[in-house]
View 1 (spheres, helix red, strand yellow):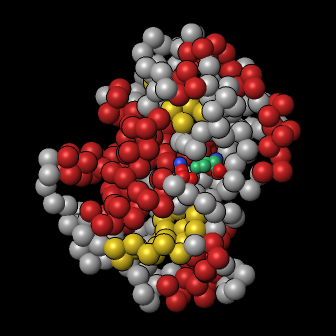
View 2 (spheres, rainbow, N blue to C red):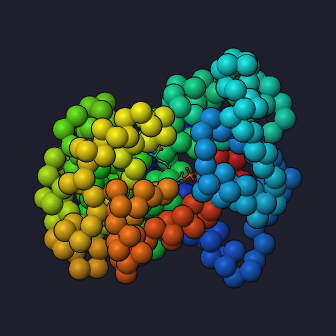
Length: 307
Ligand code: CP
Ligand code: NVA
């Protein structure tokens, strides 16, 4: 039994193994083969926040793997309010084979995992979004054939998504540059963790406040919402600060000619990314969204050791 709480918990070999499994499962599914790795298994899905991709892709992933998924909305479980996190973990473990949770505080996930007797998957916390990262690196692998010698440049907020990208790049030996406004950098502890992972692969990890410098020669340009779920009251202030980090033509121009543009979605079109870029020839936005399905199947199978 293995939890999936942050990419930083994985070894480089495990990250490669899950990506390979994801690609194999995707190819099998596309060839019309059955993939009943999780026949009759049940996934409990605890949500404290809204979702389209995560909720639907995990549900469909379980169906296509021969199992079932139960959606538990924010109003039902009321994690830590109606009942303690530890008791939720103890009870739900008696019903389901594996749990995923989308939470505000990452510590709630750590506590869930501590008290659950089944694996727990992080479906987004304020700290990290490892399922997104896995789909993103799967997409990069498909589109660029590998990671080494390539640079992922992330423009925008130092948040859960950029944390997972930094950890994944460090594990895979891909160079990673993040350009944020002052005051919106990734936490120093994230850098310490990322650098220790990168020590083994040689990935170069760079922080800057200059979005054009970051975009220059990038193989992948990535952005996310300027204000994440739970930061709605800061959105207006952030809309004044973040426009220089928007992915538009001025960021595509200095990047590699065949740069791919990525965004975890949902996009705030006209804010962090323009319509022309989101819908343009470099965009990989909807391939990423599709790969959530395939990579989550691999994560579920890996956590349950069912390959
Ligand atoms: N990218 C992502 O996690 O999307 P949802 O919030 O819709 O699940
Ligand atoms: N950083 C965003 C990602 C949404 C998928 C958020 O946490 O809201």
